[in-house]
Length: 154
Image (cartoon, rainbow, N blue to C red; front, top):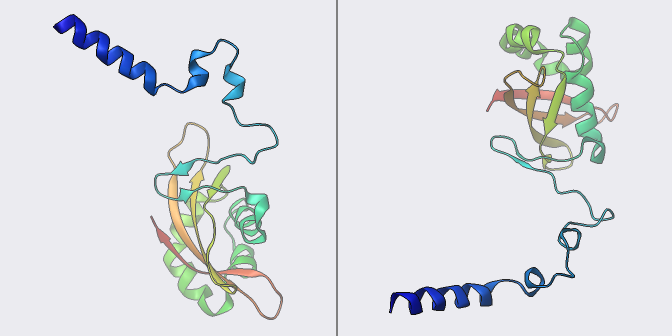
């Protein structure tokens, strides 16, 4: 009885296997995506689905900003004028320690045409721990640039 049960389960599992796995003519390459297919980027446990930075001008601005050292010029370049004092007061100590970052992973921007939120993860080296933040950006009507208006730790 026991042998019949094992043989029955094995036969059932074979029926569930895709046909290609039984054929010697089908190789691993048949199961891999083609080179023309878009790459599927990983999902970060905090930031969410990661995206290619080159896919969006806002993400390019994120990388540009966080690749620079923290300074008064950084604030003038990347932070919305109406929140500069508050932003500097809140984030000065952290930004001095964190910037510039060696690697920045970005999630897909979420929001409307003029305000978007991007989750990012900072790395300083391959072996270092990372930090994750949510960045809220606003599109300036005067110069067409994205400016940080808020930031929070994730």
